[in-house]
Image (cartoon, rainbow, N blue to C red; front, side):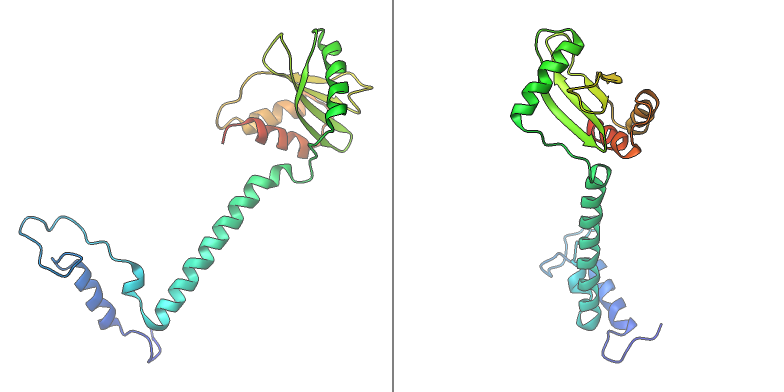
Length: 186
């Protein structure tokens, strides 16, 4: 590999590597006998100086930024475009309809997902774990087409998504994927 004249030469880099592995402490003093097993941790910033150091720093920051963007995109992607906010007055009206459909005295809406003309509503009831009710159309005028209740375990996202697609016939894959993502522990 050819390096520009202004960059470190290979013997210089190797000299620094040998200095890092030499039996001395981080302060530069010799180590006591028997203490050679402890490695010296030296920052890569000290190993690479000059133009190589600048390139190394730029690469390190670029990789950090890419990883942060990828993590944010991965968490937001399944539910991008899926609505979730409902006015409190509308939640109260839906809660009465849900209680009637489930044949319980009362219910409270905990969460709602909306996409196209599909709704998924999680309701708290006195009878069971909070179920998720799947509606094709406005819950105020339609009966739920599927009900899911219980817990999900780590790694079950794909099987939950398949369950939703099978039991809520015609539900958009986007909404099924968002639901599975939301109920599965990360």
